[in-house]
Image 1 (cartoon, rainbow, N blue to C red):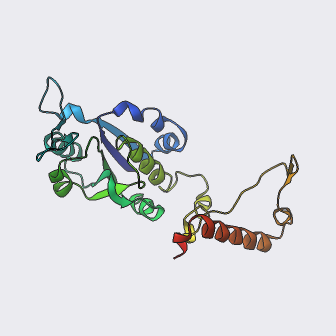
Image 2 (image 1 turned 30 degrees about the horizontal axis):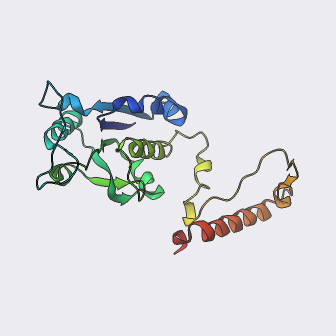
Image 3 (image 1 turned 45 degrees about the horizontal axis):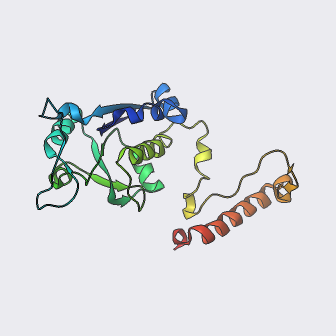
Length: 225
């Protein structure tokens, strides 16, 4: 079973996401378990539960303090081995290959950043991987953490009903996925390509690969380099 421990200052954001669709089914099947932790519980400031402070050297915004994060990780991790991930726009881009690697882990601790980020000593001393889900800035690391949890969970063995469905998805073979069609064959004048109705599996496979290649060249040529 893969265990996720997510450290956040907004734990309620995860309630709906973790109780729907594949994430819920994965938990029901005992393939993964999620623990969401409120970082403010670990603040030494018991009155105000403060977890941030002004940056040394001046500048705008606030920085997440080291004490709550160090104490949270130490308590949550215990004696278990775990990979500690920090969600940050400055991290390495998250990819399908990356998700596959993380799906083989036993324990993942995800830190959701906020404000101007975390104290650098946390990143240097605690964090194993710094991950970004794209070249843009979000309010915090919660939405990225949800994206990583979803992408990784569906790759855990036994989570998705038909494992073969994972083998023809986008980013497999460095290409985007081919187009899909379903019934009716003629919808308001828009017809399904004839090859898909032919029953010729070799021709269908060739068509799908050609379509995937054409779409990748148009939309994501970088994947083919």
